[in-house]
Length: 406
Image (cartoon, rainbow, N blue to C red):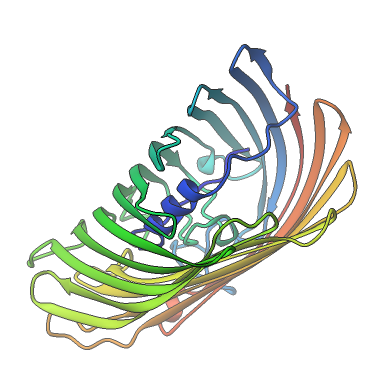
C-alpha cells in the first residue's frame, strides 16, 4: 500500500532528500517476480472502513469544513498496484504505480477514485559522489492522515513533486550536498459544498555541509532558498520568497540508529511586502532497538502561504513519532502519534493571531496468513482545534483489510 506524503512546502524536504542520499539501500523483500536485476511485485489491497465523520463537520450540526451535519458511513476500498526495483552496477531505479477506489455504503456521492505513481533513480561512485533524481504524482480524494505525513485537510487534490540531489565527499571528514525541489499542489474547490482551499507552487534550492566529529556523528550546517507562487493571492503579489539557515548534528556510520537534528532561523518575504522571521527546526530519526522493537521520529517548522486563508502566510510546526513491535515473525504492530500546528502571520497590513492544531493517534496490526496474503486492522482518531470554531472537527476511523502481494 502506498504511503502518501503531502509535505506542503515544508523545508524538511531537503533534509529528507539528504537522508536518502546518505542512507543504505533497504533490505530486499522476498516478494516479487525476478527478471535478472529487475524485481516486479504486484499487489491488491481490499479494505473495509468505518468513518465517524465523513463530512468533517463540527459535532452537533453544521459549521464544519463542509456545510453539513456530522454523519458516519462505511466504505469499501480496492487498491491494486505494482512496485518495481532495478539494481545495476553502482546505480538503481525504483518505482511504484497504484489505483484506489472508494465505494460508500450510504453516501454514494462520496464515491471516488485516486491514483498515483513515483519513480526514483540513483547513481553512486567509489570516488565519493552520489546522485538521486525522483518524481511523484498523486491525484487523491483522501489519505491525508497526519500519521502518514499529510496535513489533515482531507480534500481532493493533485500534487506533483520533482526532487534531486548531488552529494560529494570532499575529504575524509567533509562532505557537501546540493539539493533541489519543485512541488505543485492544487485543490478541488466546490463553493456549494466546501470552504475554499488554496494550493501553491514551490521551488527550493538547498546546500548542506557535513563535517565529521566522531566515527558515528557529523556536524551539519544547512541553508536553503524557497520561492512560492500562491493560488490564494487576491489583489496582491502572488510571489513569495524565503531563506532558512540551520545547524545541528547527524548520524554517520551507524547500524541501528540514524538521526538528524537541526535548529535555526527562517524568513519569509510574503507577497513582496510583509516579512516573517522565526525559529525553525528539522528532526528525523530511527532506532532499531532490538529484533522486536523499533522507533521513528520526524518533525519540522517552516513558513509558507496559507492553504486555508487567502492573502495569508502561516508558520507550520509538525512532529510525529511511531513505535513498531514485532512479537512474532508473522505479526507486526505499530502505534503512531502526530501533531501539526498552523499559526497565521501578519500579512497584507492585517494582524491575525489565528492558530490551528491537529492531533492524530493511530494503531495498526498486520498478520501474515500465508506467504502472499496479509490481514490487517487499524484504528485512528483525529482532532482539530482552532480559534476559528468553524474549522474544528474530530473523527474516528476503523479499518479491516486483506493485502495480496506476489
